[in-house]
Length: 401
Image (cartoon, rainbow, N blue to C red; front, side, top):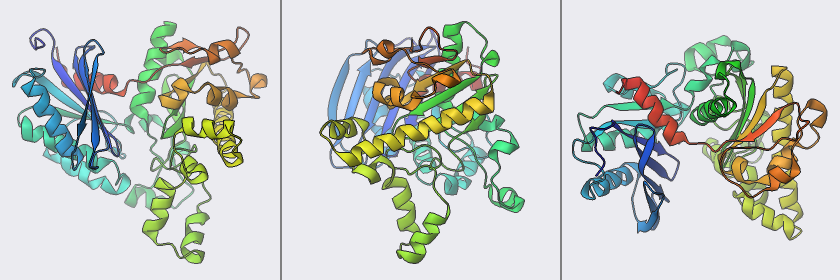
C-alpha cells in the first residue's frame, strides 16, 4: 500500500459520456489507474493499471457513473491500494463551468448548486461529473473534493472572441456566448511543450489541435487562450466523431420545419448522428482509413472534410496570432494518426508550416518534434494527460504540501 505520509494522495476522476477514467497520484507519481468503459451496458470493461504499467482487464456491469466509481473505490480499498484515511483529495473533471468558474473550485454545497444550474449548458456531461462527486462523498464524507473545469483555461478569451452576433440580453440573461472546451488538455500540453523548449509558457504563441472523438483547435497568445473552435457547447468547430461541428444555424430550423424533426431529434442528430458517423457510419478514424484503402468514396470524402476543416482553423489562427512558435497535435487522433497530421497541414508551407515526412510517419510515442529543418513554425506531438493535470490543479487548489 502506498505510504500516504510520504506525499499526499490525490485521485483524479475524468468522466466521459459512457466511460470513466481515474488515476491515483502521490505528488507527480502515478500509483494506480483505471478505465471503465461501456457504463450503462450489460457488459462493460474495466482495465486496472498498476504503478508499473501492468494492466488487468475485467468484465463489469454498472448502471451509471456513480455506481461505477463507487465500485472502483471499493475495489481499491479492499485491495489496499487506498487506505481508509489514505486519500488527501479527489479532483473531478467538470466539462462546463460557465462564466462563473475560471479556476478550480473546492466543492461545497454552494458549488454543487452552481453545477446543477449549469446542467442546461452541458446536459450530457455535467450531470455525470456530479454523479461522481456524490459517489465519492458517500464513500468519504469528509474528504475534500475539487472541481477542475474544461472551460476554465479559456476564460481569457477576449469579448471579440466569445461574443456571438446576438442581442446582449441573451448573454446577460441566459449566458449565450462561446466558452471553449478541452481546456484541461490544452493547458497540460502547452505547459509540457514549454518545459521541453525550456521557455516560459508566457513567451509562446501556440496552436493546439486536440483531435479525438471530440476535436478542437485553440489559439494561445503569450500562453493564454485567445480563440478556440468550440463554442457555447462542444458542438461547434471541427468535424468530430459524431458531432457536426460548424453548421449554418438555419439548418436545424429547416429540419424542424421541412423534415418534421422534433427539437430532441435535431439535438440527437447533431450531437450523436453527425460528423464522421453521419458521413460514414463510423466514428473511429481507423475504420475510415480501412474503408478508404478499399476504395470507399464516401469514406474518402469524410476524411477530406475532416482534414480540410482542421486546415481552415490552422490558417485562421496563423492569421490571428501573426507569430506562431509551434503547432501542437494531441488527443488520440492527433497523437497517432500520421495521415491526418499530414493532410491537415498540407499546403501550408507558404505560411511557414512544413512537416518532416519521415518524422511524421515514424511509429513512435511520447513527445516529439515533426517539423522539417527549414520550417519557420515548429510542429510537435505532445500526448495529453488530463488526469495528471486534474491532480496538479487539485493539489494547487488545496495547497497540499
